[in-house]
Image (cartoon, rainbow, N blue to C red):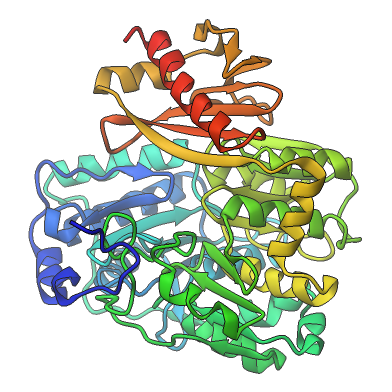
Length: 537
């Protein structure tokens, strides 16, 4: 049977929104606890994993956590366009109100992207007098997940994703509350919240982080596709407020996302880094000098150029870093380049050429938060198309991923250099080599996954990987010494990293080779043997 990946969604692919909303009000499934991943609690009401019960318990747990941390200011609330986000916001506001916690919601009753919440928190707390009551935030989004899903995450006063200590406590307390029949939840029905101009404040501040004058003067044809997400009205205001030659390519919002093309697994998924999900956007690449996409909460970016199509996220991160660190005079000369350890080593080579310190951390944007706050890390990026960077003067912009500024940066790069990001990446490959990068999965039992998560670099006995001497065996990130939950093995021209999946009986093998696709295939094959040997398979 021929795959439908990259083809338009059909009626049979669409979620029944009425069923989804009815299921939200049903009791939580006993076997579906609150589980916080790197981006909060996610699940579907159709599976009994994202219900009113869950959200009320999580919100009550957040109230108790923030009180224990001495956080007494308002909570900035953002919600995306997923169908479950609206009822979850109502639940959240009712619990906050009953606990006497002030909540700020969009002044126009609209959707709020993740970066706008992060920006609002930073902006509010930056303006406080010494000893003032700091604010924090809640973002109701499953990001790029399918339309049937909901998501709920907490951002502390630093504005970025909560760390594992916070999320572990919140999830544990929420599950205790659910086990007690939610009797510990305080709740007031039919409440209202204070309005906050998320969109206006965010858009007006963009001039502090980007050279919008260069974009405006360039005459470039720009297109932005929100992919039916929360950034739709932001892009409209950006275009009018700054007088940019920018068209919102698809302004439609539909909780079934019927206008999407199907992802690799024939599911509707709003992933701007996926060639299949972005197929209809890429088809219009010749109409624009720069064409971009965002996911439902706009924390991810996709960059499309007429001469290169949809850019691999690793490729664009390398170009963005090379450009920013040669066009931001207000940044500290000591500010580092942050990358996750499964991002391309092209970034390592670019950093070395710039004479900049590379700060390599485990998977998860939360690791970049301290450096972005104090300016010691000027750019933080993930291989999954998430990144943020400092303002022009070196101040913190957002401490969560911001797909909007990464999309606008592509236009700035094109305007200032006269070259597309795709062309600039080709120049980098001429200078540093052309790496092949891929991720594959390998079968693993729950016991094997548990062992993998605790492996030490010294457990790797191999000396050679795909014909090259192994020069490093890592189980902790070089940048901050934090455990990576797996291992990374490095040679002069290649590397692989193995990490257990949190949802499936597989482990993920990320690998890259500067010696081409054939050598990459060797690396991947030998990586499985090396890891299986370390696991005792």
